[in-house]
Length: 165
Image (cartoon, rainbow, N blue to C red; front, side):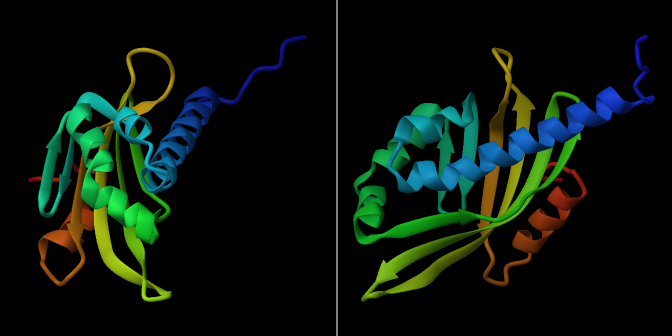
């Protein structure tokens, strides 16, 4: 005798699996970037993906990987740093998703650890065409230093809205 699943069960299960997969992908950023794995970091993004950081705009996997390979980033690794991505709020809509979270960049300075940056993070993601999983289309980071665009970015993401507009 075949047991019937409750209505909507498969869709709810898929949404939960999507949210878990997205959260795991986002959580991998810190270990990959702090481990200097430029190819691993770049692979989180779509081929034409964008990483928009306050003072840096990186378009495409090649430029994202180059950021990790840069002398500046390698210096952070040598001196000691941790990119900590907070728990995300994720809104899945079919094959697209929006996620929002905070992140901290913690650096080792003079024998102690200091928070260098606290940042609002807004991620737009899509389901990958080849194979299971998700990729970053755009990640927008804005430092939380009192500028109004940073909390607005968090609020839009918490409502599942795109970063701009």
